[in-house]
Amino acid sequence: MSNKAPRGVRMVITLAGKRNAGKSSLINALTGQEIAIVSDHPGTTTDPVAKPYELLPLGPVTFYDTAGLDDTGTLGEQRIRATRRVLYRTDVALLVAGAEGLGPEEHDILASMRELDMSVIVVFNKTDLAAPRPESLAYCSAQGLPFACCSALTRAGIDDLKQLLIRSAPPEYAEEPVLVGDLIGEGDTVLCVVPIDLAAPKGRLILPQVQVLRDVLDCDALGMVVKERELEEALAVLQKDPALVVTDSQVVLKVAGDVPETVPLTTFSILFARYKGDLAVMVDGARAIDSLQDGDTVLMCEACSHHAVADDIGRVKIPRWITQYTGKKLHFETYAGHDFPRDLERFALAVHCGGCMTNRTEMLRRIRECTRRGVPITNYGVAISKVQGLLDRAVAPFGL
Ligand code: SF4
Image (tube, rainbow, N blue to C red; front, side):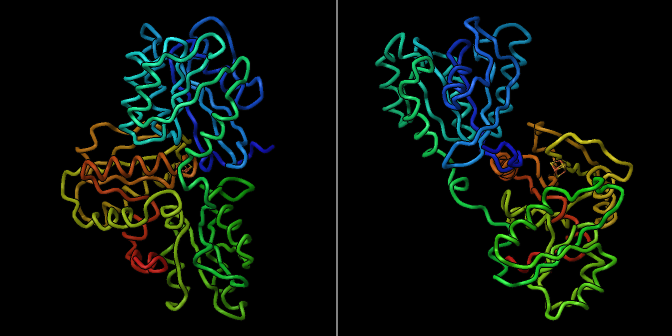
């Protein structure tokens, strides 16, 4: 059993419900492990607790055990807000109800879940104590809400709940996601260009680079990795042109100069814009850079909180390049981690990081939120290709 899958490719399953509905016991029953703290005292779980698990045949998932919806006081309000933030990146929500069935708190959170357009399963737990209330069952049937009746204590109904959970997974988790596999064939060579600069982590490649190389190997193709300085030499030693060159966005200008026009070229960011979100929307968002005006505010989104280096890509370089490209006086505001502004309308453009630490669901929700509010959204790498004048070439392999 492996818990090593990157966080961004794990399906997120969140358990929400009132205190003492048995959420923690239910995670233990689903996983067959004593991984959540269980207590008869209501409100044992405070902040959302992440538990990785291999839910076969689906694959790696993360269960989030959340605080009670009826938690009280200022701390309680903070905990409920934290639960709602987790819901934003949730693929499947389990709304856990105890013997008292569905009350106002459950209906309230159900409305939020539906607004976020996620799969929801209502779980009537503790059937060893009492049968679910008929009016709650009737409500689920009338609303077309999938539900399961079980007992975390006796484990009755747990296998059926697992099967329902697997069937409720978004289709992209049932399919093998493709990064480059549809762009190359068996025996092709893929040349990856990876600058090793101050921002590069010591002693390793970053996750998107590793994932692309793994996909190349899965396609029975040949992967070759060089720094931008060795690119010309690499092209010279190859007996035939590579089927694809994938470069770090920051050196796309130099790489485009070295790679013949006849060789397809793209960037890691563009591959991930497609893998994690919606490439066509991101490309339209990059093209909207041309419409920025003096005084506009640009939202810079980072999906994780990391230590910003002196010439940080999201905080320094991209704002500088967009400003130079447009010649406009722009304001840039950065949001990091799971924070995402509610007042999106005040931004003329959103530029998102590659999102390697988040899942496709959260990225798609952010894209959908921006699109709904009329805010163009792009990502770092797509924006860089745009301001370097190379966007059309870098998205040509995708027919855009
Ligand atoms: S800021 Fe975004 S792309 Fe960079 S490490 Fe964090 S999640 Fe990954």
